Image (cartoon, rainbow, N blue to C red):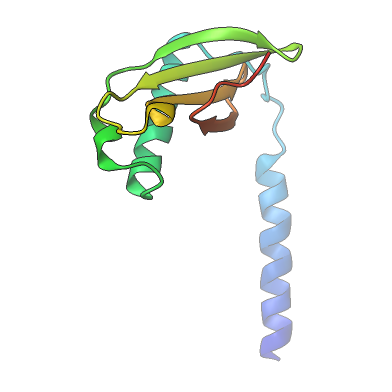
Amino acid sequence: MSTFKSALAGLALALSSSIALAHSDHGDVMPITQKQASSASEAVLKSLVETKKLNASWQTQKVPTTTLKNLKSEKVWESVYFNEKEKEPGKQHLYVYFDEMGSFLGAGHEPIKE
């Protein structure tokens, strides 16, 4: 009997979540602004430091240079950080990318080639 109750509860939850998400006000998705892209890249940088994928010296970096670029026939926000404390010259820059709608695309020490 408990399996039946669990299945019934699961079905009720599954149906209620789809009903809750079905509303008429989905609206148009707007592209993010430069300020939003910059803030999002700061959150990515913080996460990379917290997960030890970047050393702690990156945590003190200032607000990045963020520009909208046309890469591979799509618009992409590129935020560029520079860390003079990084000993390896090839790793002194960090590039963080978001698509025009704000989805995270990736981060690395080399820019995406156009």
